[in-house]
Length: 595
Ligand code: GDP
Image 1 (cartoon, rainbow, N blue to C red):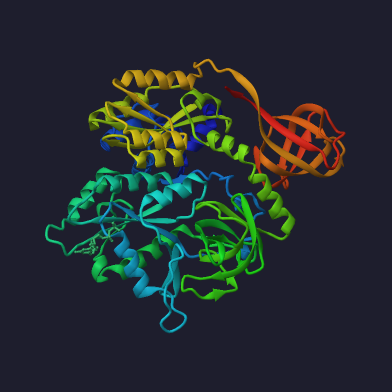
Image 2: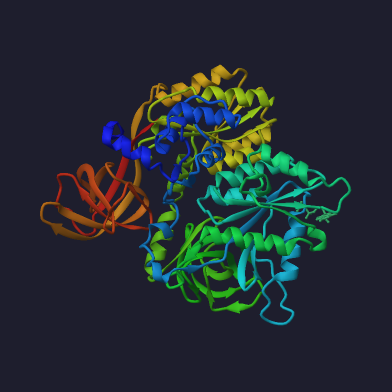
């Protein structure tokens, strides 16, 4: 490796990097390499932070962050393109078109800690009221204004909705407010909320509520959250803590200001000049008006009369209402609006996108309605230990785990041992852990994070097992740690004797062809079903007959080579050793998959 070139090494010594890029699975050794520090030095620093680790141990984000701080470096998250969202597959926005957009905030926390009260208090005292006495309507989200800047609140407290949406690929929240009652402290759902918020990489603000109740002990809350890795700013961490009295409307201004400070740092930008894209927050069938959905506009401007695809349905915006029940003609990034004009009722979390052409939205919708495909697709999204080795994404295979145990000691022991499993090209991340039986919340987190649940000496209630089955989440229980470790290691090494079978993963329709010297024929395609992947098997279907079978050579979105392109997007495809491709051909794409 180039780091052994002597003169380079000297240069490196002089210019220690300012940043460390964090990605799940980052090990102590990876950290040392990026930081250009000896591994032993990093291990020592970790010991100082009370973390016992060897060089192959995977660092969680918090420890990596603390470690980076020790070295005066900044920890940055690796930027990952989320291909399940329409907007990120689109053309890039020009920097001059980008303007700031309001942050989108979700409130989470344990039951009875005051989430609903907080949402109501904020709404009643501060909703942007354009008309005197504007009455707020429940549409699933509302906007408030503070210092002439807007904040959008998702109006469904609790993490079930949040996680359901995330499981469907929607990443709509920028900031999570974690409400903790000062008298009650950290409770099971507080812990779950922390896991969810961390897994979604949202910034967290802690609102310590019920400061008026006898027995209120905000310092205890601070300590308990520090134990979960949320270190308050006062204690040298980066989590803002705000003391509030949700019921009496106290501390709310400070909370809103804190949200704005955090949002400022996130530099949230959007381009109001483009066609709108976003996600469904709520949807229902209204007796009088037909299907109604609340859309959170993520980018672009949504207008009455726009054609859109949403989930597996489509429509044309016939009318829009804002959170004050007022009819509006345009909605901007960060704003939630209730729309009518849908063909069918979509699901919360479904992606939404406007297209210029009505035909395109209908095409996308009809392909998505292919139930068989959807079913197969949803099965593919969740993971089991057996199919771990067959992940087709990227070079490094990743296993996310949620650990439940009867005692904290088992969790720690497992964490320690898992770090010793060293299989090249495979990495493990523990996305959640806790003491006690497996819960519905664990299933939702596992679904959203594509994780496997491992239990030690804990039960799985029947209803939870049923939910796991429904969501396709694998739950494995063990009595002893080493048995779990053996299974995991075997799965990582791909020793579970896979049997392969060809499986269709998508279809693309050839809309145009271009002939380029040296390259051959490039087919301009629309992916009409599933997903197209580079190096996958391609069958050219003409008039219902397979006329050629080969491999996808190159796959491009605009000018860029990409690994995969999903349904509803255009792409350029070349087929290895085949140039006779014609407009109207269907390219059927398949891969070898374990059965
Ligand atoms: P949620 O389950 O988290 O949505 O909690 P709620 O908002 O329903 O609140 C639970 C209870 O706590 C209700 O009876 C509220 O009136 C009460 N509550 C909320 N905020 C405060 C507060 O600041 N002080 C006191 N004393 N009670 C509060």
